[in-house]
Length: 185
Image 1 (cartoon, rainbow, N blue to C red):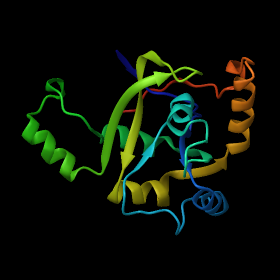
Image 2: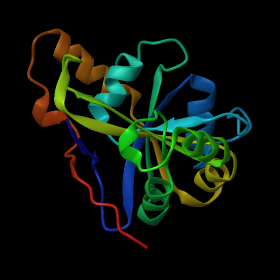
Image 3: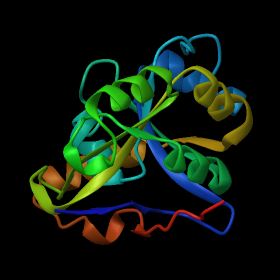
Image 4: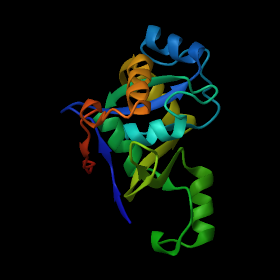
């Protein structure tokens, strides 16, 4: 199965999505980054695929994931994240022994997971989409340096879900995501 990063991006930023409860989301939108309600001592996962995020949060219906944030981050920050990520599941193709991989996971601030991309109904597609877990220093850089803008898109998501549930084709209303290529250092 192919692995592709698909995202909405500009020359300077790439959009990722996260879902939170109302308190964390409102504080983040107000501050333009995450505040005291957000825990810096645990891993947080960012997803550039809108439909994968909708699958993950149930279109904003899952508990503590009712508010969907579209977060524009610096492309050089995102590229750093991808280049330094350690895959979260071991396989023989990653080029290191399982012992070495376990040590890399222990030391790394960034994890990478490739999950089947989803269609509008949540069904898996024929390629995998990336999600990235951030902790420790990577999470601090994300919160303090890489975030450019945070928009609460909860109302937009609710409108899309309502139309989708009525059988209306919403495909033209989705974010225009394209294949994204990470720039090497």
